[in-house]
Figure 1 (cartoon, rainbow, N blue to C red):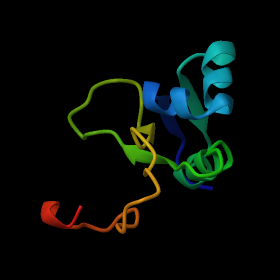
Figure 2 (cartoon, rainbow, N blue to C red):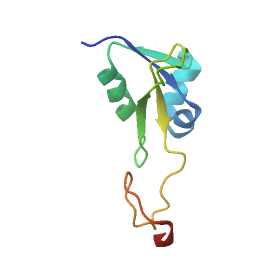
Figure 3 (cartoon, one colour):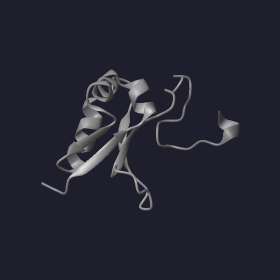
Length: 94
């Protein structure tokens, strides 16, 4: 296994994922994993269908207790956009 990895569950993730929200309500906003890959696996497990949660490393100068954050996209695609997640489109094309 890798080094221990502490994840802070951010409000965006709690709003999108019932499982993430329940974790925070029961255990607190920080969750410790044995490795970063295990944290990423948990992010996939708590992602509800149609939504994506991911683990992003904390900024190197962030002195908080977390090594990374569990985040979610602010809003889901409306379904009428040609753009796929992770791709860019010109504003004039939207």
